[in-house]
Image (tube, rainbow, N blue to C red):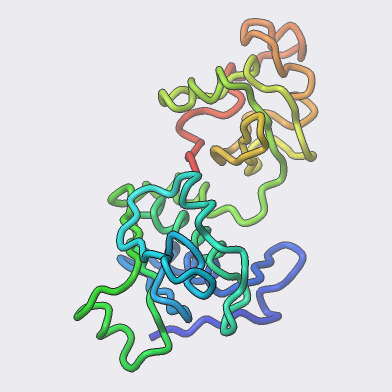
Length: 237
């Protein structure tokens, strides 16, 4: 059984975690694990903080992490952890996109894994896919994206329909990156929607953002792709 510990050996300027939850999700991802078990000081994710509210209810199963689940997750750290429930939700996002089931359970009880099987008094995050193909799994596993693209509502709608990201829908470029670099794709509220590989450098995108694809060659002075991020090089978060 491999043991991976969060310490200075993985806290460099290029790759930095800050909690064991997200580290565990990445290890589960790259090892193609079927299930990740996160043991906490509570039984799982509740509708409210169970330490503060007696009427808090345990959420037994989560198929999709939406804004409601995000709000429910507490930012307060438990006495035995460093990231609180928020980092566990971040870990669950990685697992759900990687074809890996994840469960949050109480680790302060006797034989906690055995109790998951017997009582199921925990929170399960059900994976959204069977397995991502190797390319998209690599894209979503990017730890340090080089930049960001802020896009309009029309572009978000197109991406939801499975289309590529075009220059016309880009409103702003953050950061400096090269062609082929990992980048984040954010909506107008600065909420991350997807990650992908850019077909252009940041300098090129600044010149063509908001423009129709048939004007790219005229603006840049050379033939280039029409898609800023091709659908095959993008994964929704």
